[in-house]
Image (cartoon, rainbow, N blue to C red; front, side, top):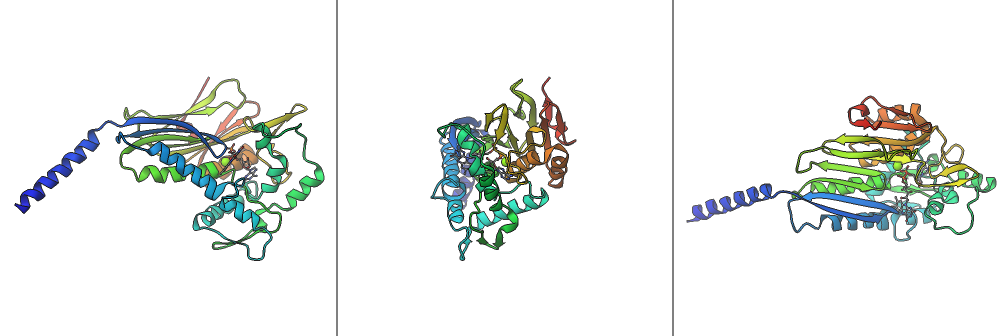
Length: 341
Ligand code: FAD
Ligand code: MG
């Protein structure tokens, strides 16, 4: 009798499994906002009751509010910035100390171009605020004295990170704006991987996109690379299979114009001014969300020649759109991209 029940139970399990596999995944879509940007979710799931899109948004908001935001007094970054200059410093969560180690690695490899301690200068310019129409009055360039004072507070060489213990000099402020969306993609990937009913997904958090698994019809994921010149919608289309991360940094979305000059949000740590390396947009393709986001910002500051070398050091593919509209890309990138005529 026991054997019968065991066999019957096994049969039920097998039938249930067959049932799961045969249920055709359906797409759940959602567009919302988080981290000051637009989030687009396309999830293919065999679970008709799936709450994946809601849960991913909760995960993103938690990441912003509890960990990464420099604007919200509920976040760990806020507390770390508040502790700048104190003797005790801060004890970081394991997650944040790992993120900071990774940021320091890209800082070293980019010879200081990518630097998450640029907070005081980023805040002084506040291009995000001006571009979002949050500020009143008229935009003006920061005064030279204020800029050089803010620059003196920056520089990752002044950070002391010993395990999870961090000391920052007074006035220093961390700003993870260049990697927050990439970190978000990593957290979303971990979520997708633990849900067996999800067979494929494409997720966009601002300019950073994650592809995962496959579509029910087996076709490739298609990701448009925006044309920074505005002459067309996309300068090219990436065709991807399986899991990838794609991030784009550019001077064409978050900027202010004054006397015919465009001031954007990516700052060259050498000058304290918006980076001017001859490129308008950089797209990086890697398997890793953090790296795609960090490298797109770093490569934008470094320009096409040095940026190409940096991407190669991390095994990432990269595409630059120069200010004259011409395109330069790594040889590996050419396998995935179709340029639009
Ligand atoms: P990226 O190239 O990825 O990053 C550019 C950003 O990196 C700059 O905006 C600056 O923050 C920083 N940066 C500048 N120079 C350097 C440098 N040399 N090295 C390293 N970093 C540099 N924006 C809002 O307007 N309102 C919000 O409420 C808001 N909340 C946010 C919350 C979180 C958790 C995060 C991560 C970002 C938030 N943002 C907000 C910021 C906004 O989304 C940023 O403009 C965005 O992160 C920049 O992304 P990007 O892809 O355009 O450019
Ligand atoms: Mg970035």
